[in-house]
Length: 291
Image (cartoon, rainbow, N blue to C red; front, top):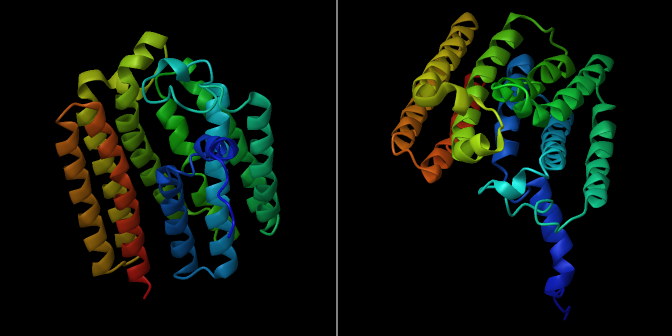
């Protein structure tokens, strides 16, 4: 019988998992669902095992790499923010050098995966890396880092269309704009959790600049997102299943506003987490349309 590893031997593993946020997969889902929307739409259904595997595994690796980049950029801020003060770099549970090593270990397989795709998708992947690297620094300079994250979390859409052999046409742009608005909405919810700490540290976010109008603007962005997705569905004659998915997403948004009305950190975070179900429900609607 194998003896379990002692607790001190597990600490580096736990620190690495925490650094990459593999123990908190919400970011993977929020990045993955729109990418899968795009794959299914440009392929008119199942995109094939190769594309599904590359984009699913690539999303997991890319999101994990983004978390490492984010924590490296914020290592001097995180100890002063309630939600992030126990992150590995903030507590010195992992060194900066080891964090860079983990980052390389994530980016190398990402490169190998993307090299199995066509040239245009490979070129687009370097844009993804540039935006992912720039995003963590945006809250130092602009009140709209969420808009930059919206681009980063929408980049899988043109990559999916490119890899799937589709052109970057109006359908792709409608999907990208809808997702961009949705990302700004849910990341504003996320930023509302840290708003007080960010103000003390002199950092910027949409939650700060929107202020008392945050809930209203989130609602407008969500309505805009669903409106664009409805236009996309109508233009492609998507059926009843897709329409039900749009309605379901709207109901999830209403539930999020109920949570936001409680005005606590816990409820802001719960509203943010609920967006996983929005993405999943819309994915089911798109899949159901092609059955």
